[in-house]
Image (cartoon, rainbow over all chains, first blue to last red; front, side):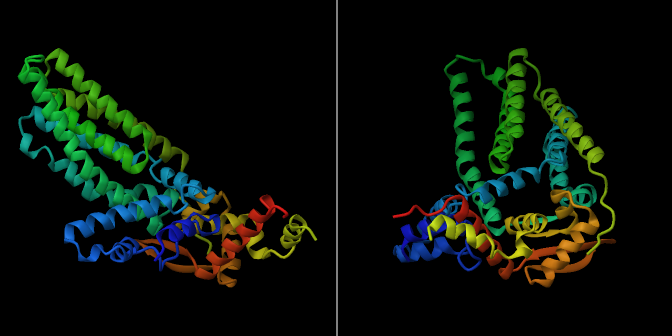
Length: 258
Length: 107
């Protein structure tokens, strides 16, 4: 298999979308061609992952107008505001549990919200704007983005925490002052990851908001719990505004005629 | 005949099932996803229920769209999927339009 030819074929405007036969296991086939099949499993996996990333991003989808349409279609998938509301409630509940002293139980409600997400979308969103199954290429891209976020995000988060610790050990900042900011930094990193994965700029704004709330808490020497509640309330508020506007502008669809 | 005029003449031979604006939009939307339901298409196209139904019937008759009727809970749901024939027809049509807008340069 000629990799440049494959990428060039994908770049053509008429071939903006790879056929069903081409999409799966392209990276595996190419890594076998490159002789990576004889390498250890982790190396094969890494090569496969990298090649699939390159193929997806060089397949011409970024260049064709159809790909721009698909990108904007994907962004509008999240326009209803339900995700913002769900995320805000998750952060808010974490703060409330923290204040009540139930820190270990804090992840319970966010996990429950994640489990209830599909049902909530089917109940409130799909009757108004319909249901769609995104293209296999889009789902593959999102899975790879998630994998990249996890592989890159955790080391960066550790670096930030080590940096915070270093600042406290170097006596530039007293250790206890750093404490309120740490949960907010983690939540901010999660929001930033969501923004990158979903291509939603407003989640970057939420990430910045949580970070700033953390810094403010650090300066005012507040406990983390109230800071998380403040951040969660702001995000929930923004989500609620967006969601109620969606419910108002998009009535439940009438009967189907087909 | 020059390539530009040849491209222009090819427009006369386009598949009118695909070329109709509403149906072109429907096919394009379905090409961007794996499958979508009737309400999704209605929301994105802005067409009325009757109008959308009529166009989908024509596309189904031409073999461009696959229609599956079922239920989502108690709510009836019609799921639509672009067939490979429909995908090819759309590709050909877009290529024809593209050749008109960006004709090959004469040698």
